[in-house]
Image (cartoon, rainbow, N blue to C red; front, side, top):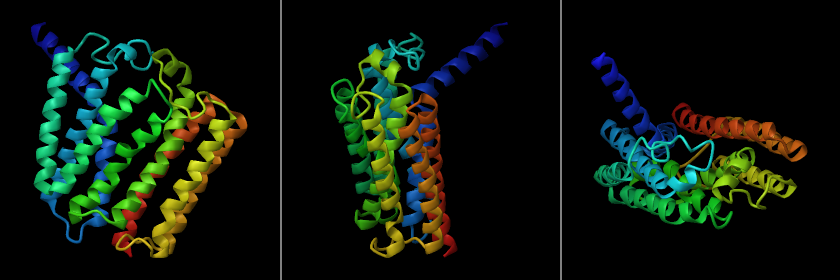
Length: 297
């Protein structure tokens, strides 16, 4: 009986650790960083890959933990967050702070070993997410714009880890993921609008799920597509994309745009969820296509 209780307690601790660091989100960020590394690497280094994966997870996990510490009282008001470790009382603020601080230090050290610029961008990401984006969420919808900056860093971070410098190539990767985040997060803000209102969060550009928000979602979807196919035209240095790769990315973008237009027409929670899923599919497949295109060209 005692061993069973111990197993349950251990499982609960592991689950809470995954939740406080948002493991699913953190792993998706690591995926973006690794994709960026493959695009920038002239010769692949397993050591750098491992350091980037762990360093990336540490930095995103730290940001998420700090975020949940700061928003613990607001999280308790919303259905989607009230069962998180801190508002549910399963984890103390001190424990979460120790995790966040430890992850910050480990992340900075790990990324610094790769090169100083990688660590610098990682530090900027944590600072913007926790010190600017998080407090702005209850004050203005411009918080999404600020949050899109740290959210766009991982894709370019991989390139910087590979090359040790910033230029047109990582800048393009940054632009792609930056523009992509608006239709993605506004779709989430749309179908969670009522829940966000309970916490006092301003996530939609017009403050509500209306035609104005839908128009902006379409506009940023178009900007995302345009940024994504720029490498086809040879303007982005060593970051290149073949015509075939560009066509595939363009088709993916049109699919996402179709769902954005559908949201404009229907303005329903179902349409917003479909757009969110299509946006996740878009950015994941785009990164896979970019990497495959480089090695198959």
